[in-house]
Length: 270
Image (spheres, one colour):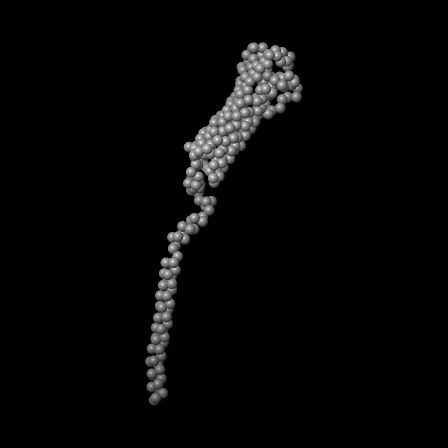
């Protein structure tokens, strides 16, 4: 009988003990959860997410932004950055084309005086990006010479030349923007149309010669900013051009007008 009573008592006490253990385990888990929340709250207070976000943005390379954003930052970083450029230039120019082998020594000496002259030019460029611009270019070269007597190709007598070459066309300009914003390097390419004129006089008889053709020109230069909107620089230019049907000048069909020039440039920016 006693054993039966003990068994009954154990049956009723066992669930109560299990419930007590489960309650203690739940209390421990609840306390652990509260402690973790407290720790998370403390960490959140110590680390400012907003500051981390801005720090991350500051570390992003400019290549991750789109073109408009890069241009905006360039304008901010380089206060002298301008989209419009207007320039004038002047200097000396030399025709570098070789003369035909069958030309007389007398005529060769005379024509050398027509190979060197003054050059003037102007351009206007709109930069579609900080480094690339599109525009128009104009240049003019002039040279003259005179002799009282010359003999070539069965001609004898006086001769006077007044040569002008006009060149104009669309321009592509590439430039650099250094961090100090003081020194600029640039390279221009022009594919244009030129006109050759010569007010020639043979024995005081006028021959007004006018020829035209397409030509190509390129220049490499450097500019130093004098002030916020103005620069002074120097450039080296090369032009390739030729005209046909020029027998009256030297007895040859083609006149090569390729030349090089060294000019000073004055540019303004807007």
